[in-house]
Length: 284
Image (cartoon, rainbow, N blue to C red; front, side, top):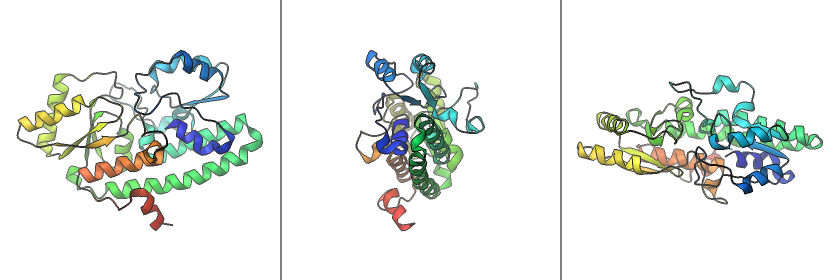
């Protein structure tokens, strides 16, 4: 997500190399020798922050002493006011799930690139403004589609707790088998409680994630079935990783479009033909 954001703002002025590939869990990723070399050879380093890249933190902190480094989730004005914390005061790093908050990260990227390359400040600002216009429409689209889901089914159950910002922004209740980080393994009691919740609320679907094992979600389906309630796997969502490089889902806009459409279809909502891309054309 961060690499895509930097590409959108930098345009032809930058060569962007994303270290963590699609389908890889950033919570568990450890830097390789090749990654360290790439970081050392870079001009500017961007990462999410808020402890998302837990095992990379030490390397990134060292780089901050010799390179221009920007943690986009921490760098924009008022970031602390937008950060969600769990019951143990752990910061939720998944800010991209709220498009309006991710729009604030655009400014952090633009300012950092302009600081490094000041002669082309107007270039970065122009590209940032154009991208913000797209994201503003995407935010409207997500809100509109979510509202078509019947209120009693507006519940998102996933493998780990990556959708808190989406919940706050768009009015969805979210439950994750695991916590904010995938390093926290769920216990049997966690699964049992969530199965009871699914049965009591009559939730029709749960969701797997592209970068997280589906075993815990499948356990929910089996547990609900044992209590006489049929729950389906409503589809695969992108949480800590986007789709394949070069695909529509491999962009931030495509990732969010895919997620909201998948969620809405499985929970009884209405998705416009063509998703966000065609919807946007009707709003020009």
